[in-house]
Length: 488
Image 1 (cartoon, rainbow, N blue to C red):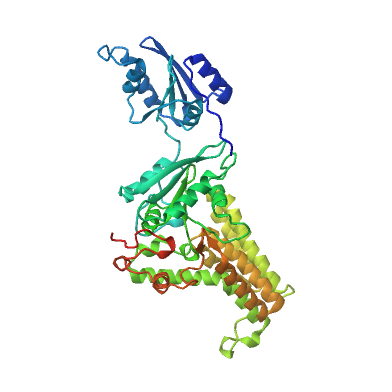
Image 2: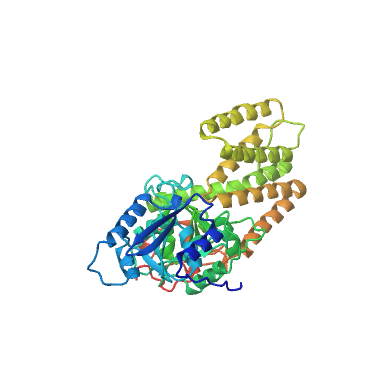
C-alpha cells in the first residue's frame, strides 16, 4: 500500500476547521459537536462525537479549562497550562490532522489551540452497549456469568481481570480505510509463539479493505484463508474464562471492536468439541459429559447414513437387530424422506432465529405436533425417519461450536447421498473422504486432527479424558509455547 501523505496542524484555527469540515463534514453531521472557548487570550476549539462520549466528562473538562484562566501562578506557556489543566487520565499531543480525525471518530475529544501546531487528544469516549452477561450458547451450571460485549475496552478488562500478569500484552491496531475498526491482539509474552504473533500482525496489517462490515468473521477470512472448507479454522468464544485458559496454553487471541465473539488461534478439530461445563465439574463427571457430547457429535454425522445403509441392505444386520428399518411401505423413497426431513429441520432452525422469542415456542409446537404427525399420518414419512433425523439434530445441537455443527450437517447429507447411490462402497468412500478432508486441513500451520494425526499419546489422553488440573503440568505442544511448564 502506498504511504499516505500527512497533513500537519497549522497555527490558524480557521484553516484547521475548514480541513475538518471538508473531510468529515463538521457543519453537516449533527453528531459532531463543536465548541469555541477563549482561554488565556487564546481561542480553543473543541471537537467531539456526541454519541461516543460522556456528556458530564465534556462539561467537567470545559469547566476545568475555564478555571485555568484564574490560575495566575503558573508561568508556563498556554499550551502546557491547558494540557496540565485537563482533568483526565489520558491526554496526548498529536501533530497531524489525520491523527485528529481518526481519534475524533473513535470517540475522543480533540482540542485545537490558536497559534499551536499540536492538538490535544482527550479520551472521553463511552461507547453505547450492553452490560456483560452470560453468552446464550456457552452457558454453564457452575461458574461465572459474565461474557464479552461489543466494547473492546470492556473485553480487554474482563481478560485482564483474570490474568494479572505483567507479561500479558494487548496490542491495538486499526483495519479498514473507512471503518478504522479497532483490533486487539492478546497474548502472554513469554508463553506465546513469537512467530505466530508476528504472522498474525503481518496478516492484519496487510488487510486492505474499506471496512470490516461483519467484524470478526471478515477478519477471520483474511487471516486463515479458509476457501471452500466448511470446517471452522478458528474457535469463537464469548467467555473470558475460556479465553484466559487458552492464553495460558500459549494461544493468541484476537478481539474485534463491535463484536462479542473473540477469535482463538491456532485451533484443532478437538478445540471445537470442548465446553467450559466439562471443566466446571469434577474430572469424572467432566469425562462423562465429554463422552456424551462425543457420542452426540458422532451421531450427528454417522447415524443417518448408517441407518440408510441398513435400510438398503438389511442382510448386514444380525437377527437380533432385525427391527431396524421401516416397518411400513410409502410411495416416497427413504432417501428423499431423509433429505426432506433433514432440510425441513434446518428450515425450522433458521425460522426460529428470525422469529420473535414469544412466538418461537409456538412455532416449534406447530412444527412438531402438526407438521410431523400429519406427515406420518398421510404416509409421507415413516416414523423411523423422524426418529433418526431428530436424534441427529439433537447431536448437532450438542456440538459446542455452531460452525462445526453446520459443517457436520453438510457432511451427513453428503454421506446419505453416497450411501443411497453406492451402498456399502459409498459409505466407506464417504467416511474415508471425511477423515482425509479433516486430516489435510491446517489452521495457521496447525494439523487439524492433532493429537491423533500426528499422534501424541499424552495429548490424546487429555482429549479422551477430562484430566485433573494438577496433572496438567505441560502446555500443549501444538501452540509451540516458549515456556512448556505451566507452573513456571
